Length: 275
Image (cartoon, rainbow, N blue to C red; front, side, top):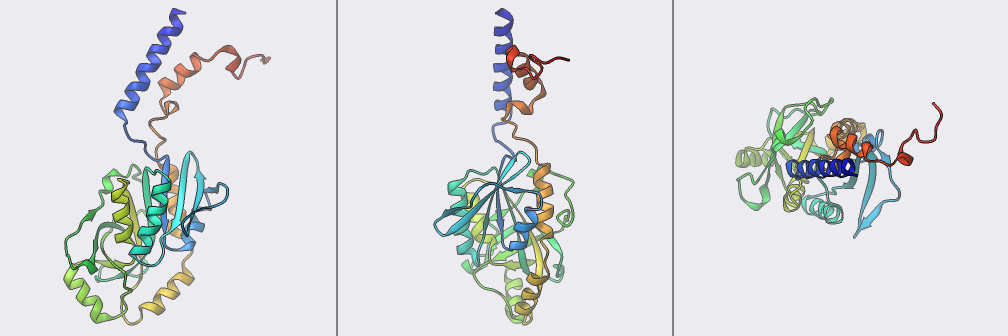
């Protein structure tokens, strides 16, 4: 009896220490915000759908399982307001530890090459008439370092985000001169705003789909037709590499060992078997 109490006390101490040292769960519940259906299908090459989609308002939210991680996926929609509504629907219904986003953007700077993937490091709402960057991503917080292609890129872009699709050279050049942004999109502002409100760390990648010039609409349609969801496939690998939830006692070998030691004989997988 004394031995059992001693083990229980040790177990309680280790549990308390684990929770104290790791107050925030990591990687167990993930919000995925996508712009293109191909990226969702790419994610599903590894992730398994779990039941029917749930609907919050008019926003269908899919639940997937990938290893030990649960993923809630929602399409962002067209425009920052639509994206904010989608993000709010998901994050109000489901608590998430991480948020990941994939989507296209138009190039504003010469360094943003069509077809290239980039990490988003800063986001601003250019139609608000302000040039400061209220949302900055700390990529050092992402606990996965060896990222798969094409998301292994270390190239970063600043994104000017708004409600307007930029398809004129003069407008593009004025926007770049005003904001000094590398790319322009219609999602990042709304998504960053809601993730910040919910205190969920957001990591976004952008693929350059067009030059935000007079050929932008045609180039964007051609890009969507040809795109195969490579970003979604790579993101699935990243999610698989996320650490297990540190608040789960089974994550810690010492605690797991104590849990096994405190099991009654009938709970042992070898109880009653003939070896």
